[in-house]
Amino acid sequence: MRGRDVFLDSLRLHGATKIFGNPGTTETPLLDNLSDYPDIEYIFNLYEAVAVCSAGFYARASGETAIANMHAAPGLGNAIGMIYGALKSNAPMIVTAGAQDSRLRLRDPLLGHDLVAIAKPVTKWSVQVEHADEMATVMQRAFKIANEHPKGPVFVALPINVLEQETKIGATTAGELLTNGKADADALLQLAEMIKTSKSVGIIAGDDVADADATDSLVALSEKIGAGVHLEIVTSSVPFPVHHPHFRGRVGSDAAQYHRALGGYDLVLMIGGPFFEEVWHTDASPFADDATVVQLEPSATRLAHNYPLRLGIVGEINDALTQLFELVGEEPAYVERRAELAEMYDVAEQAAAERFETMRGKSPMTPARALYELAQAVPDDVVLVEEVITASPDVMRNFDIGGVHESYGCRGGGIGQGMAGCVGTALARPDQQVIAMTGDGSAMYSIQVLWTAAHYNLNILFIILSNREYRVLKHNLEQYRSRFGVPSNKPYSHMDLTQPFLGFSEMAGGMGVPAKQISKPEEIAVAVAEALATDGPYLLDLLVEGLES
Image (tube, rainbow, N blue to C red; front, side):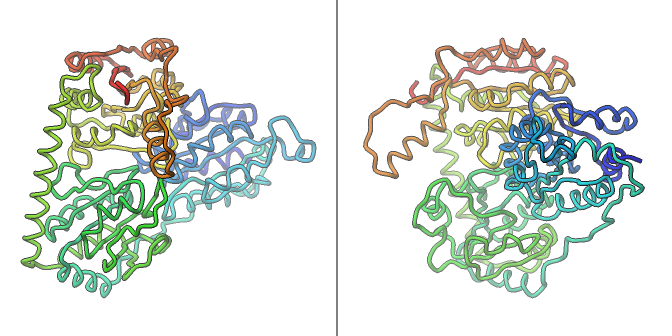
């Protein structure tokens, strides 16, 4: 057998069914032999970054280790930003790149470079297969490392001559590895006592709660003990229903905002995340001076990474929360906490409703109005992929994310993930309608994905909120001026998407996707119904107000 056979056998043995790629010359040994592996489908993309992002979202939505195939040094370079996003999202995936013949290494061949060095900063492990005899071991180790907590991308360089070398060593797996141990019983008892005696309990839930299918257990615990539940500023999953009375929103972008959200708790429980990813520096502490801080993680890697703890617990999240639910018992304080949270929720809902009514009739329509009409028009069983950034609070207000609506978000901060990631999501959920919501600026980072969506006739409704600007950058410019004491009334330079305007309907049509531009909110429901009745992808370009409208 040859190296390419061992590689493809390894994918089959580990249950991988798709390769997301953009083809190139050094990958031809794999492409030319895929016909012998009909159970492995090649997902054809027009750009490497789009392929990697689609693979990452596919991994998260399917539970399968995703495979992405790049081409040599420029192709890998094109994909680095999206590999970074997969690393931050803890997407289990193996990124490969076809490399030039290793016998040319000292001759600086065309497209050649040190691929391992390029990929290393944004992957858990980066390696080149030097001989076909190594292929089985490298691939076994790659799958294992990609799926160790915290999960993430691994890179494997595949020289074209290695793919053609003969070997007698066939593909293998690491076997069944039982790594999800139970939390220490004494530690959970200790935490239960802290919960009983605390005045106010806050929980920050990370992506790992959703990955562990522990949302129901977290909801049950929160409802029993009267704990407010928060999210980080950016998440790839939403592990708690955003319309639940105990949901307290995202913590913000800096430690001072964290303190405003969390400073009223004397017990803070952080579960399943990096905690925290700040945007701006402040000297504040996220917690009250006398707060007790506890962290629960599936492995010790993240415990006390940024902040000292009173108690750190390692254990499978769902099992730990289930045990904790039984251990906390019933206390009079829980009733008071629940009542306080319900009152705060009602006040916030009333204020939000009043704000919405004041903006309801604005023209151009606000993002909030557009998303309200969209939410009314789509069925409950849709799968959401969301990257609208500045309008994210409006998405949470109008869609029951974490409750009725399943949703996938974009971690890492690099834009363009939502547009590309919806293809991977749709391939993982072939029987469901995917709604991809993004801004016009973000859409242009991965607009090529429209062709792939049309090519595979995927059930994706692309929603683009066109405010014709990089709105988040305008917000951040104001933040910069305020935080660094820069007085200015200068305009927002190089942040408007005008002269000319972006024609998304025309772009979509050119790639085989029917599209319509909408400027009036009352037209949205009819347009959505038409789109959902159309087989395959569809794009709606919703014109909304910008920051200066």
